[in-house]
Length: 333
Image 1 (spheres, helix red, strand yellow):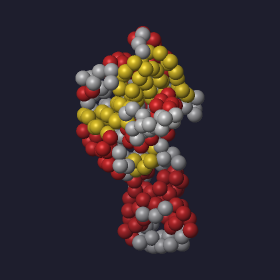
Image 2 (cartoon, rainbow, N blue to C red):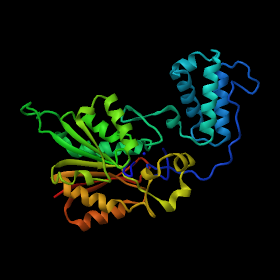
Image 3 (spheres, rainbow, N blue to C red):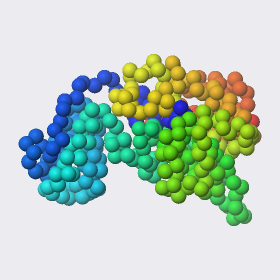
Image 4 (cartoon, rainbow, N blue to C red):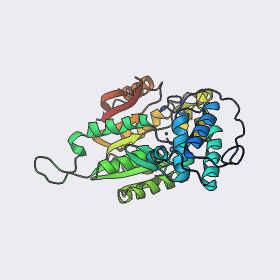
């Protein structure tokens, strides 16, 4: 986390946004209220109804994912075996998960996984849940690298020079691991202020066979890398950018379960950008690239910082699918 980064909120990545929820009724953890056997079709129907009654977003998908997780089966199996009777242990596990989801726990924490950039990541309550909006950071970073993102020179077929990349506030490691996967000639440095978050990121790097090219460092922003001045080609970050004054607007799943240090940057949410941009400027080579995820109200503030520091060129802002400026990018002069 950097105080870190990513389940669905103020449109912070919207780091989420749904207002207060009604109280959650107690649900039976047995197969049904009478303890009778129950088949796949009925289990799904009951799970969906219980989640819908407590205003869980995407309740149908959540019920499916939780039943898949409880039984160790995929969606195709569920819908091709609707009359399969659940074993008591599977039924107990499923309805216990439904009750926890109805109480507000994110589905991703219950299943322990979330997909990002086509890669499955382990997630725990120590890290922000990766969100689709953060994939725009990947898209902008790879587009800005252009041919430098290729392992070889296309004209000579000779190996390309090694890239040095930093991911600030790595959290689950979704950006660091995905960049290492896409850039086999890159050496990646992933920082986070949270030791538990770094442990999750290390496991994800090992799982996807890129751990030998990622250095994990416990650090507030880029402090641990400051001796490496002007040696980086690319710095990316999905920093905390929710303001404490927006806390009440967050979905309960985010406000009550995701790590505060990964969400909140200060009273208004833009406080972290000035220091992050200044430290990145000290580490990037001339021509090196900075790519930052933005909060829903951060673009004007970040644009002013980049203009004031006078060491940035080719500044651009990229909108997400909702039309909100989501990514800022610039080259260091």
